[in-house]
Length: 487
Image 1 (cartoon, helix red, strand yellow):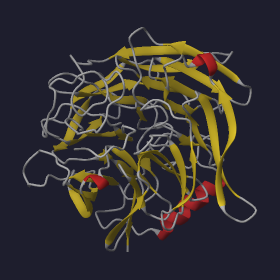
Image 2 (tube, rainbow, N blue to C red; image 1 turned 90 degrees about the horizontal axis):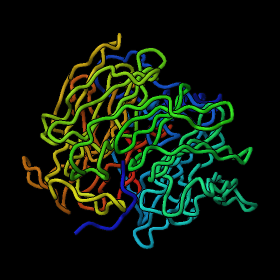
Image 3 (cartoon, rainbow, N blue to C red; image 1 turned 120 degrees about the vertical axis):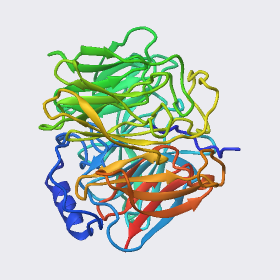
């Protein structure tokens, strides 16, 4: 999960399906291994945009997978769109136009940008009402390519992009629903996602989980137990809505009147305090739906245990534990702020312990220890198809500086690595080099890489990248958006 600050640090509809198919045909396969077998992923949400590009984590199930291939054969190249903003949310609609939600370095007013799909240049921008640091980080594209977000006025917005009479692009709030008393004063929405009826589920930092119907104008809520906060986004599947608080993971459903109710709750080991490289005291995971059949039989998170963090996998049906496995041991950094990547029976966990965020949300609290070197680490865990146990397949010390994305088209992990200035050390500096990397999910080894920049201008701040339909990899940074291409 990214921090929304940019101070320099001392299934798709028919149109979307056609575009996806065309993109796969035009994008050369990654030069590695045999053709991948089909891997189950969460089903397409009919009220969201194209799979892989509609949400920060790819789909409403937060699988962090994409059906698009990414940069293929040929020399890798990168260019940076300078927006003087941290850009954690980079999405692409069925019309291929990237829609980016950023927070400027100066003023920190969340701003929506519409980018040129060919050049990455900003075609139009729209400032939103300023709220909390994490308020507005998470957003998604609906089935009409509108950005759905809650702004600082505590209103649910649908932001569309249109051409005016002169042919110029403009952004506008096409629909607005005030959430009113559903979000208390001083609180803010941290995550939102649509359900299969077109309603919008949301969760606030203060532990309110709500369901908004902006067609009927209805908002209903339920509050989690006192003291529990929600510091990451939420995930939706046909079975319900998964929310991980600073204490437990939940599955919620709606009753006949459209009121949220808790179906089950599973507490996890949250440790003694927040750790360096995490933004809250508790799990850093947006819960991930995965499974061997429908792609949603299980829900995965990473806990915040003191010495060794563990991947926790639960059955969606009743919350019972499928398995619990230690992760990130090779790197020696017990912590992850990132959502696990889930595809079929495989889960990939990237470590963020010690990552130097330039700012923290209000109420994050002190970390224990006060600071640490960035350890990184990347672990693959496979769950037994029968749902009885899991095991580590590989575990390495790669230092991912972004949320990895798995292409199911080429069976390749995409991310940006942060290397130390002095090879072999774990420290970080303002002069660290960053490189885009393609990683083999079977071995955890880097297949190929390209340096994209040196220094804090290129800090990807543990933000998620997105594969565009033309094969470009779009990655938010602390100052704008990188566009990485091949050929």
